[in-house]
Every structure is written in structure tokens, then in C-alpha cells.
Length: 313
Image (cartoon, rainbow, N blue to C red; front, side, top):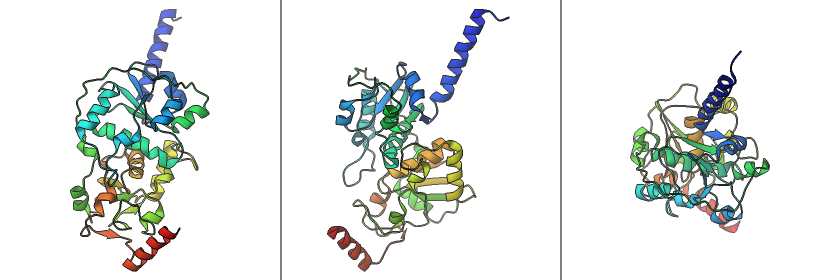
């Protein structure tokens, strides 16, 4: 018969192993986060607007509104400077040993893109122990878990960024892959954007990058929620929407790198595909140069008519 200490020791080891197993997972349930949120190495990053954070948040969470992770109004997908992002990460008390958990509002599937984009940004900066709270703050409150209004005091770190160039695609890289059968370009926008029926204000023309296939970001979620599908169901979505022959590289884009972050997250982090990149500037940048090849671009007359329809409501 085992001694009491052997049983206790085995239990501690099992819990530790279990914690390590899920800590590195890209998605955490509210219960999983609640179990470890008070651990010193865990940092919950609330990316909702400041007023939402002030009204109530997960105990111990720090506030870093989504806008701080984004670029200027005319090209919000553009990354702020590495210096700005590194200073932000340091101010949140995050360093290489931190398990950072990103929390958005959980309003809908589009909202999830904010979590995915911040997760991607942190990974680009060289951080690796990252998670998203599946379902966001809404899922947390729906679970009846604790929340408060206290603002924690955290010590700034001296974190140094080590950029992961393997997860980002810049405009010249995208242009070089047009027509390459070994590269898969995926457009994460709703179908009407992909077909050129709708244009984002940041884009010069409607349509999509030449050769892209449409993988709507909303397809990865339980209908009407921001709760990401279980892995087996996500695999089924990918099998249905993507070519069966695996590409050597995938580049995800949208209007401003927001919806595209969800497709990147699904393929790279949840499904574990290799060589998946995010094009952060997306069509806000690509469409500025008329020489860059596009498809599904309606004629000039149709574009004017659609613009008038938008003005007239």
C-alpha cells in the first residue's frame, strides 16, 4: 500500500503535469483560467475599452485596450513600432516567463478577432506561452465567476522582443507569391467583401487578392457566439473550405488584419498547421497600388453605383 506522502506527491505531480499541458493551449475555458488566474506567472490582459474594464473585469487583469495594439486610422492593420509594442508589453508586467491570457468582450465572432490579433502580436514579439479566453469576458460572466473593479499594480519588466518573422507576411512577400501553387492565400472576410460587392473604407477598390480563396472568419465558431469550435469540428471546417492538398505556406488577410487573425489562429494555433502567416496590413495596404493583381473587382460604373447606394442608405 502506498504511503500518504507518495499519494500526495503523485497528486501534486499529476496536477502540475495537467497544468503544464493546458497552460500552453491556445484556448482556455473560463474554468481553466479561474483555476490559475492568481498564479504569479499568469497575466490576464483585458483588451476591452477602458470604460468596460473599469465597470468590471476578471480579478487581477490588467487593461490594454485593443486600439493600443493597432495602427493609424487609415491603416489600422499596420503594426505600431516594435519599441511601442515592447514598452506596452513591459508595462503590463509581461516577460518571457509569463503565461499571457488575452481577454476580449466575447460579443461575437468578429470580437474574437481582437483577441487573435493581440495573441498574434505577442507571438510576433517572441512570447510563446499564450492563450485566449474562449468566449471572452461574456463567457466568464455567464459562468458566474468572480469579477471586480480593482486595478492591480504590476511591476514593469525589461522584456526584449525577439521577432518571429515566420508568422508575418509583408506586401512584397505576398506579391511574390501570386500564382505560386505552393502558397495558399486565404481571405477571411465575409463573402460579399470577397466577391467585391462590399468595400471597406480603408480599401481603394473592392475585390480580393488574385488567387485567394474565401474562408470566412465566422465559420470557426458556435453560431451566434464568440466561442471557438472544438478542435475536431475545426478540422472538419478546414477540410470543407480548404484544398485537400496541403500548401507549403499559407497567408491570411482581410481588410486590416483583424478577421485574418482569426483564420491565422485557427490554422496555426488550433490545428497546428506549419508556415501560416498573417498579412497585417491586408487590403488597406494592398489595394493602394493599382498594379497589384486583384480579382472580383467590379467595373467602374458598378463601383460608383454601389457607393451611391451606400451614401443613400
